[in-house]
Length: 453
Image (cartoon, rainbow, N blue to C red; front, side, top):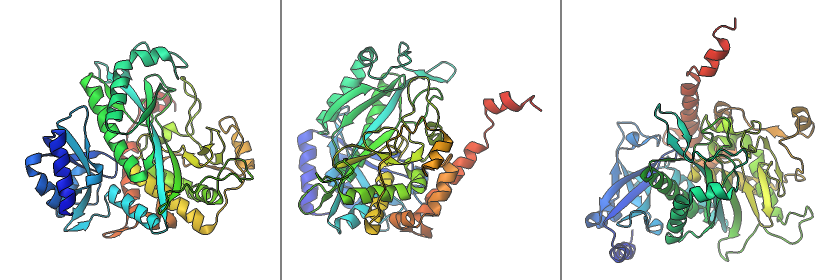
C-alpha cells in the first residue's frame, strides 16, 4: 500500500476523531469478523494487516495447522460508524504468507470484478435487505418484538411503522451519515418485518455496505433489548426475509449503462446484452441457488404456500418476467434486473460473484432466455408448470449443493483454491450443514410418527 494512501487514512482518522478501527472480513457464511485496532497502531495495520487464526473464524479454508491470516485493509472502504463515532471500520482482504487468500469471499468477488473490468464491464448492484425485529420469551423462544403487530396484512401499515419509528429513524439517519442515501423505509409483509433501502453502487461497495448494515442492525436492536435477524424463515407461518438484488452492467471506460435500450421488441427495455445475462443466470439457477440461498432454513422460505401474513414472495421456479414478483428474475423498469432468489442469509460477495459469472457465461454464449413469463406462478398447478417447461428450484440445500458441485461455469467462476476448487469446498461445508440439520428429530416427527404405526 502506498504511503499516500496511508497518509490519506491517517488524516481522515484525525479529522473524524476516531480512536479505534474495526479491521473486518467475512468468512463463507458472511459472519463479520474483526479486530479492534487502536489508531496508535494505524501504520502497522495499514502496512502489515491484522492477524487472525483463520480456522477459529469459520469456514475460510484453514485448519489449526495453517499460518495466520493477515487481513489488509482496503482504504476505499473506510467509514466512521455513526452509532459509535469514535470507531471506524475498514473491510479487509485476507492474505496468507503474502498472497491473497482465495477462500476469502471478498477476494473472490474482487477477482471476478477485475476479470469483468478486463472486458470493459462494471457490475452495479443494489439490495433490498429485509429483516425481522424480534424479542425473546422467558423460555427462550422468539416472538415479534412489537406485541401489537398482529394484523393478517401488516405490509405498509403506518401504525406498525409508527410503533417502531425510533428504531427506523435511527437507522435512516445512520445510513445518510454514512453517505449511502436512504430513500425508503417500510413495514414489510410479515409481522415484525422491515426493509430500509439505500442507493445502489458498484457491487463491491454494495457488498461492503450490506455487511456494515447487518452489524448496525444487530447492534441497535441489542441496545433496545431486541434481536434483528436476516434469517430467511424465522417463523413457519410468516413471510421470510429476502435479499432482492437489482443489477446492471456498465462500461468501465465511459460509465455508460449497457442493459437499457429503447428498441426492445419484448417491451421490457432490455438490451440484447441484458437478455443474454439473464439467460446465463437462468441456465445455472439450480446450482447458483446454493450460494444465493445457502442455509437449510432458506428452503423453508422458498416454494411454500402463502403464509398467514401475506404472500411468500420467494421464487419457486426458474423464470423471468416483467414487473411480476412471482418470477425469479423481475424486470421492474428498463435497464436493470431484479434477482429475487436471494435470501437474507446470502453472503453478498459470493452471491454477486456467482451472478456475475453466470451472466457473463450467458453473454459469451449469446444465450437468449426466451419470451418473458406472464403467469402468476404462485397459482399454477405443478402440471401447468411442467407443461410450460419451467424448471423448479431445488427443494433442499443438499440438492442445491450437489448441483453446484456439478456446474462447470460456477466452478470456473469461483476459481481454484489450495487442494481443489472453491465450489467443492463450499459444497462440502453445505452438505455437512444439511447433515447436521437432518440428524435432528423435530417435534413434528414425534407428533406425527410416535404412535402412527
